[in-house]
Amino acid sequence: MGEWFREEVTYQNQASLGFKIDKLLCREKSPYQEIMIFENSFFGRVMVIDEVTMLTTRDEFVYHEMIVHPAMAVHPGIQRVLVIGAGDGGTIRELTRYDNIRTIDWVEIDGTVVELSERFLPSLTTGNHDPRVRLMVRDGVAYIKEYSGEPYDLIIIDSTDPVGPGEGLFGTPFYQSCFDILSNEGIIINQAENPHYSPEWVTGIAGKLKKIFPVFSFYQAFIPTYPSGHWLFGFASKKRDPRVPEECPAFADILKYYNREVHTAAFALPNFVRDLLG
Amino acid sequence: MGEWFREEVTYQNQASLGFKIDKLLCREKSPYQEIMIFENSFFGRVMVIDEVTMLTTRDEFVYHEMIVHPAMAVHPGIQRVLVIGAGDGGTIRELTRYDNIRTIDWVEIDGTVVELSERFLPSLTTGNHDPRVRLMVRDGVAYIKEYSGEPYDLIIIDSTDPVGPGEGLFGTPFYQSCFDILSNEGIIINQAENPHYSPEWVTGIAGKLKKIFPVFSFYQAFIPTYPSGHWLFGFASKKRDPRVPEECPAFADILKYYNREVHTAAFALPNFVRDLLG
Image: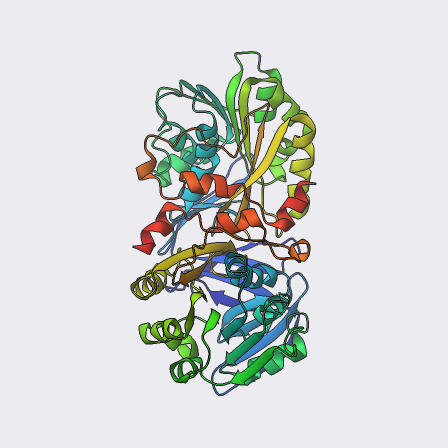
């Protein structure tokens, strides 16, 4: 059999998604969490934080394309971006494809995740040292609360689950701070969990963001290695309509998931997901 | 830990999706396959055939709504339906919601699946004894080859994977026979596997159906308990365009997944899935 990593995908430990560990590459405790990266002959490299699968190099393209490109297509004029979390670098890589972005401020609480990703997941970290990227290893909640610079056009909250170090990134005070430092045309995107196994997290995210932002919607993507495979992102803005992409990225032909039809389709929610929106 | 059922979700046994078995309800060998049904406190009841998860009562609504309602919305005049497989009854249940359907011929090779489903999965079998339903326990390939009655308006191939008893239901001769007994406005729907872990099955299905039918497309749904959660259905017809639903079902308010927007969105394929279409 060999050794396996198995993630509990429902709260009650009634189902699990497991990956064979062909070769353990690292298992390291940072001040915040335990990070493990291993090889699997089908999925490539797999990163796990605190017993939760963060990514595999086989299917990470879905998550990282879909957390970045919908917002950029809705508001192609985005110049100033703030990224909270995203320690693996995948979100930064997708953002650096856009010539019109001038600044990517990147606030990740755990420098160990960034270091291990640069070492073991080089296909994700190709944007890390782009001159527009400024990495700050610190707490995102405090950063946003204290920020007094120019407003951001896009804030991406690419966090772990609402437990442990990621918890504050799902709270009303944090969302209000995001609103306050966002430009008038600005957009906030966050990873928003899954509607099958974590409906209470989903309703919590929607309930809080809808109170603060005039426009809020979920959109969804097929992510095979996350619980249920049905993953939601939150889209909040002061006025931009999320469903209508103004343009497709200039580099659209290199993408493996996102296209114009997928953009609109991602916002078409099944009835049971609509119900969670309240 | 208790006992678990774990399905290998990739060929090379590099990942598995497991369910805790709270209570085993039956485990029976038919002449064709081994059928197991157990209870799980999160997913309800789970049916497994030859070590592959067929359904859970928690999320089967996605599969069964999506294998039936898109075709019915595209061609509301459907009166004569043929179902191949579908032993658990879920597809029959969804079809019997339509008053305009006059005949549902149901050909399932394994009567044991039907019997065990009626006994242990009563929420799926509510349509089984509708007067319009005629169950024939026999081989679907032979049935279609020998059929000489009135053409069908809709043929649904609700099969297991292309191995074991389901294999013939993925072959060119079978697809050609389906074409031959389909009315001019007719539609064929089949379960078409997943593009992440079984791309060669997906390309095989597309390649064969595209040679025979003037119109062919895949559409997709989020099915948490199937490998990768990204499930495809094939839509083949002589002329009907799949993307444009003529009407929503009269009972749309009781559905948990399907709606008009989901219909159109289901046909919006990510780039890597489009590539599999050839």
